[in-house]
Amino acid sequence: MPDKVRCAHILVKTLTEAQTIKARIDRGDGFSEIAKQFSLCPSGKKGGDLGSFGRGQMVKPFELAAFQLEKGQVSDPVKTEFGYHIIKRLD
Image 1 (tube, rainbow, N blue to C red):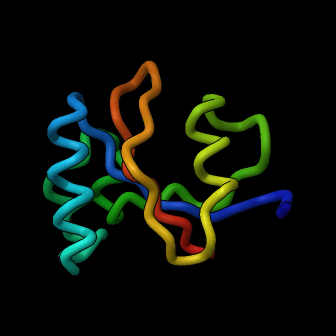
Image 2: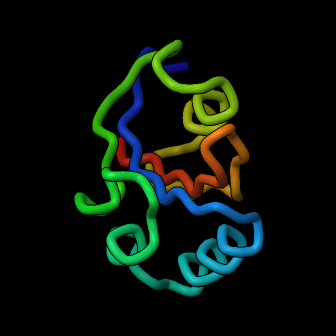
């Protein structure tokens, strides 16, 4: 398991929104463009890029999902107290 990962994410309020966005990504729509358009997080302006982070820096459900992803893989919706995240591992 790596000590750090670099991820991007898209944050939305509802599970339905998250599922719709995940389906678009699975069809080949660009993650970065969707993040710029729909993400509620300020990182959305940068295509959702959160940079690199280590264990213990993110809320637990987000961290667990992020560290399980392979490079280039996109998660199913992950619920946290902030809403629903679609996470993409960048490295």
